Length: 301
Image (tube, rainbow, N blue to C red):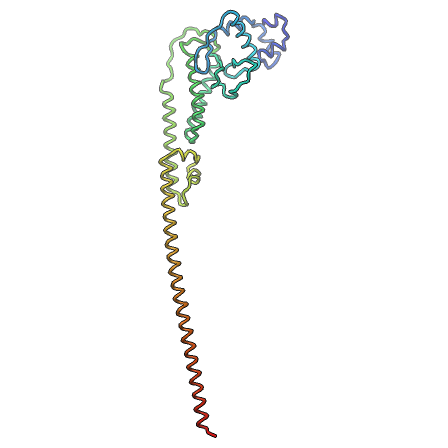
């Protein structure tokens, strides 16, 4: 290796190349810096939009090569390299695929394709769960991944390691409507979720609320708010329940008024009976008095 030939300390070389051990550095020591730089120049490098980056020449090329050598020691990524100068601070942490200074080569095509599959799966899951914000964020990553993959595979220019690919027979490409299958799957899952929510709403015996419907249908409340037909049906049922409760309250109030009237009449009748009873007692006492007086007169002196 060129650095080792120039008596550069092996620890320095290990850190520059981001090796895990000195044994790994010793194993690759036979590769010269010139060989590595030639491979780097031949590799097709694209940004997050899939646009090919122009190759530099002259002293500028030397500066770019030195910067990338140093950058890999500090900012190596699992699917490319960061071209941001080391003196600057990254404002796109954990979001390299939306970062304008992200650079990658065909060496990382397997990682990009694998991440694209995972991202599309996340989008389908987010649509199913009604997480629109999460789906939009992942669609941005999906768009950039598609641009990167298309840019790296355009014209079959590069091999898996970034070197010019040998001529090969044309192969059948993935159908162009593959994303449409994913979209159709997401729409079908959405319809199934909406039908389940309507069914749970129909089966509810307790008072209808957004939280209860979300719990029964196993969806989020924000997803229900995003479905106008379902939301309107819930509101209609809530109004009907409110009207029924009001009607029951009216009947109850009417029953209470009737009972109060009957009680008042009973009190009035009791008062009349008490008055009549007192009059009878007075009449009876008067009759007893007259009877005693008659007896006294009959007996004489």
